[in-house]
Image (tube, rainbow, N blue to C red; front, side):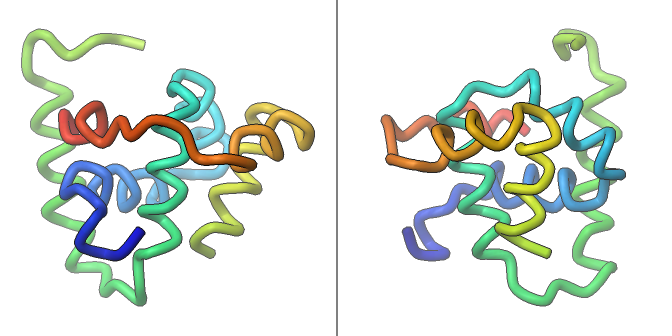
Length: 111
């Protein structure tokens, strides 16, 4: 999956998850579908050295969307796997990243 194959929503989600405390990120991941976790992990893997000011628009957009009605409640790839292990355990994390499944980029585009 090249950088062009990663949706803007997945890129924003990756920036948001990377900006969270590990414990908070782990809690967020427990609410995500497996296919979305794979897409998010790939987006995190493809993020290069990003200046902090690049995170600001993504975080501001996310904060704005949190306030809108109708929002339901509820170090790269190594970091993503570490957070997934914390959220799901080592065995489950290995299963999550073992084989690609159906593409669900559209779900992350909602971000």
